Length: 121
Image 1 (cartoon, rainbow, N blue to C red):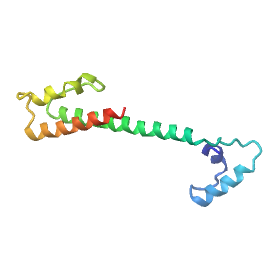
Image 2: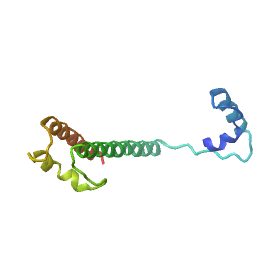
Image 3: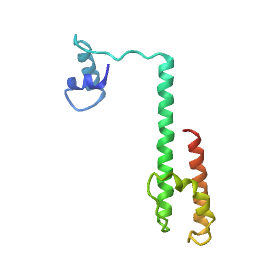
Image 4: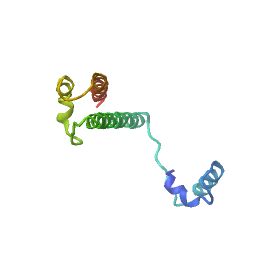
């Protein structure tokens, strides 16, 4: 049964006892609709989708982190620009862009991690 169907029957604040009472009340209603049981293959597909979404979320966070670190040293890049990530080796090798060595190593590791996250797409 979907949580939206039970919510109208919750009488107090959310806690286990109130939730159990609301579920018991909702189940007795004749017009209650139940969520169909998924087979193993359907569950596996949902889990794969969730795993992929995790990769996408981590990849976006990594891109934003790299973009933020570069902007701290005057390198402005528009969000979502795929050329930035392809040009990263050029940025790291440019001796005149003002990036200290420690920052170059950090950005190189972050970029390697981004490439690894890209493999999960």
